[in-house]
Length: 369
Image (cartoon, rainbow, N blue to C red):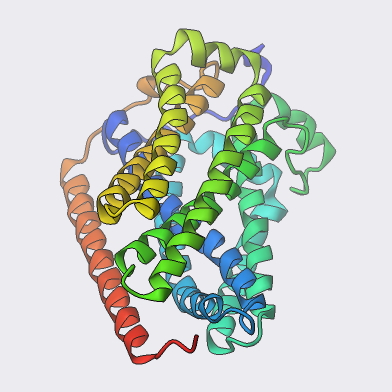
């Protein structure tokens, strides 16, 4: 059956490094991209909601202002880190990703102008804090971009649908509507974005808990984190049940790693929620906040790993990464790793400076409560 599916042959050029290294770099860059993306999408939603309450809640207005100043920066990180992750996907699965990208070509190309408009909308909202139109427009466009990406990456794993889609529209006007995992996968990501953005607000509040604003951020952030996290359990079950039968069998029987990751993916979020609650209700706020950060990072790492395991189960009939030719270029890889680490250190310094500047500006503004 698989021989009849029109899958392009892999790039004849050998991989520039071992498969395990390419996979590791893919997972690391995607994890970093996911953190920035969650802050951007979830933060945009929170900023838009808080902007509506600016006149009745002084702290909501302050958080809306803080987020609108941060969002253009987080979107820049999202794009940069997303490009890195996308490049490693292309290295490993280029023949599949290019095929699915062609099938949804009009929408895929449309991501670029859509992203530019969303970027402009965030800058507009930063310059015009009392006008929320740019913020809402950017939020809608970012959600649309996420939907297109989920379409592409689910279609990439379903080569059996390609020929029928191409016959339906050779102009790239397809979307992967018939995939039963499309809706739960998308909702899983978007609820996760809201939860992680809420968690970042909670952590910021925990480190500034000596102020009324910090206390407010702790409580609001915890609500925005806990509710989507718990709701994601239902969406996650929907997502699992929507997977093809052969993928489910692989996850729960043939692949021990998949079963372990699913179990950890259910335990770590509960632990994170418990530590968030304890951080608010006990006097050991920082201790439990740090443990919540650890549990949340472990959750995201598990989810990223599980995503790759699911992808491998989908593509097992079509792609064997271990069979790809490899011609390691260690000098180039070494330069990349040095620049990558230097880039991460630069980002860390920038974030610290941004946080310091935000803290100083907060001190200069007397709360009008």
